[in-house]
Image (cartoon, rainbow, N blue to C red; front, side):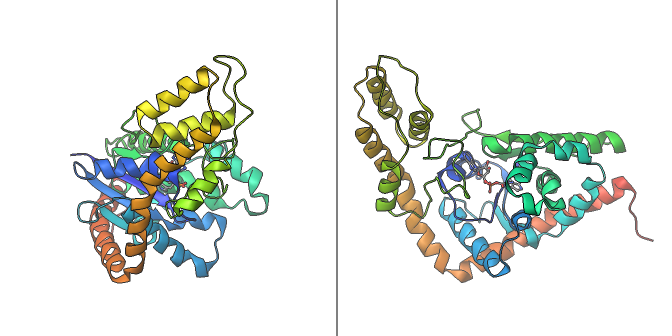
Length: 329
Ligand code: TYM
């Protein structure tokens, strides 16, 4: 039985990218492994959210998380800030993280470009906090989307460095994980990049059927293929990529053939895509409504999760302190 961990920031509502990149894999793994799933509210502080919205955001994401199929009876579900041991490990690992490598991280460079007025030290050390989340339970597998690949690489680097420095075989080499082998990147509907919380280019798990249809019908395409096997533009490629995640292989094959023979009608393609997305989202959406209103249940899940996570984290911290030579009189 392997230890599996994953997390999600408590910013905004979950979208199809979160679901297919990470959540769906957790759900499949939870019964066979020792699983930890948490909501990264410390990480969300790097963008200075309004304190009045922090808890409601955690509440929403937690409900969406559970509605997507995570079973808190078999997996340990907790809130990051309920586990202050993570903050201690973060402090200790920061002593072995170098500013040069942190400055070169793609996610940091992007924030420096986009968030010029708030380039705080939390952003710089974001990968160290993430490594602490993973290493606090010594997790071997981390189901995540493609965008987290570099952070996982850094986690392994920090773990190896710790092991080498202290002459121990303590932290594992945590691997990003996806059942389809390749890590997934679900693109946005705007013809560029990935589906994201802040980009406003995605289908949310709480979107109503009509909203989903409207969003898909507005997705960027082009004027259509002009010759057999003509190159695919970004917007159309994105639609096929989303289709690969939500539709049957036969459906995907059908539309790919229509494209190759220049007979494709984007209207039909989008209608099919919207219905296939609805098939995935609708049952999750109805569970979100039930779970979100059940505050007593959410309180029970997070209290129980915090307790179980603390047991594992306390053990790691006692061992890490011992390895580093931090002792009581
Ligand atoms: P976050 O909250 O941005 O995303 C949560 C998970 O969803 C995946 N994801 C996607 N996968 C495919 N296509 C997309 N368009 C897409 N958008 C998001 C992400 O890869 C991620 O797996 N730093 C993390 C949260 C975190 C974490 C951790 C994750 C903190 N500590 C420890 C794993 C382990 C983040 O911001 O993910």
